[in-house]
Amino acid sequence: MALAASGLARARPQRPDAGHLRRTFSRLGVVQVDSVQAVTRSHYLPFFSRLGPYPRETLDRLLWEEPRMGVEYWAHEAAYTAPETVGLFHRRRAEWYVHDYGQRDPRTGAAFAALMEQICAELAAGPGSARELSARVPHSLPERARDHWGWNPSRVKSALEALLRSGRAACAGRNAQFERIYALPQHVHPALPQPPACWGPEEDPELGLRPDAGRIPRGVSGEADDALALVRLAAPALGLGTVDCFADYFRLPRAATAEAVRTLAGTGELVEVDVDGTRAWRWHSAVAPRTAEGSALLAPFDPLVFNRRRLSWLFGFDYRIEIYTPAERRRYGYYVMPFLHDGRIRARVDVRARRGEGVLVAGVHMEPGEDCWAAVEEELGELAGWLGLGEVVIGRNRPICLDAGPQARTVRRERG
Image 1 (tube, helix red, strand yellow):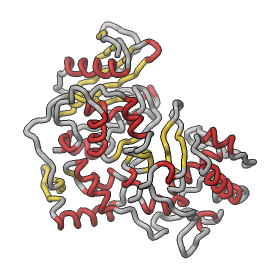
Image 2 (tube, one colour):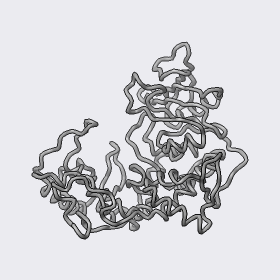
Image 3 (cartoon, rainbow, N blue to C red):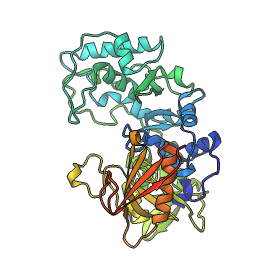
Image 4 (cartoon, rainbow, N blue to C red):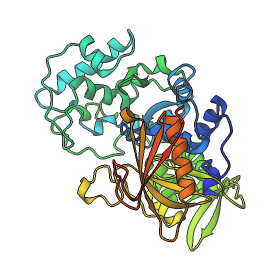
């Protein structure tokens, strides 16, 4: 049921087109964005997992050209979601100031708030990336110290992130360097909200500007994300789930999600079920096919995968992403993609595209008792061809290897 809801229970179409991409996006409701491109940018992969080789330029057009089927917002983490869905995140916009982007600095906070207003005025003249807007909106603010990741975003970039969270700016797309292109919401899509400037709740309108504000609690605005509408989107995308599953899909508070589940159970839209002793709910129209066929490599940020607790509950598959784990402590590799085959997750595949050499390198780790090498090789060949790589090098049950050794197999494929 979960696989059918996610679009992973049927054979892929022979010639995926814009209609298939639209239907897949509508089915999922949210597709996470991430800058890691060990294989390709993460938002391309959920569509490949469900449709096979499709024209990536078509997805770019659907997301970045009018009329956009999706826009980028903090709908899970950074993610593409329908423009109408963005309007449901009332609290996220209203409480952007809970995080100090620079507006509470005792020395430069006032100048930072003024910079935000300057950027809004400049966006009225046209969109731009953070680098472009830094040239268009000069300022004398000193840059902030690097954070714990070692990143040092510019003051203009920080101001743009605050404006994006608040809804006063929107993302019109990404450029060739995968930098966000910022614009006013009304210039991106008519369904996007256009909130006024807000720096605090009604009873304390400058709370988010005060240096002495301390830790501002969530909920201070009195606003709430529309949990009922968001669970109505999450439930059919999941097929069935627990309160935790529905809450995690759009990162909702558990209490608000539980209330939404009770309401939808009362209307009959959710039906309570028992899954091996776990209390859960299925969407009323979710289908349960007799079998789930086909193979798919799943990105670490795929909607079926990003809730690790749900993955363990439904598939008995314990998974963690090791991108941020030091290399010597990784168990399976850097960019490990679970391999789904005929309804079960049967392997972990650490995949890396060596674009300059035209090679896709994969370290394959079978789950205990599994043996589906031919299916893995076929899927890696499809992926390599889609990426324009002519060769696949497969290492068995070990961390990824960059040279074909005695336990590695090379599969040659035509480019294209």
